[in-house]
Image (cartoon, rainbow, N blue to C red; front, side, top):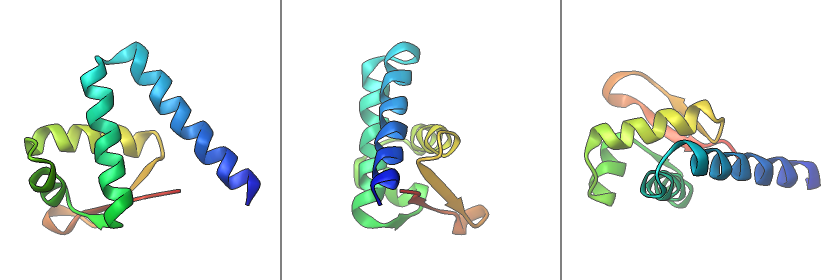
Length: 88
């Protein structure tokens, strides 16, 4: 359990520090908010996230792609039935 928590924290720190150098703060903040929204609700589609956060769907999909590449979010399904959930 300790290693899982430690790995989770390392992944989150990697995401935060990577964004600090690659993207503006607003991008980092919104991406973290997308992650927290998924974490809070469990499983959501990109449309549900965009609607609940009042963000453009293209922006949400960009954040989700980054979160997926960083291993923080997993993608399940294809097309309109695609949903996202946190991996840790």
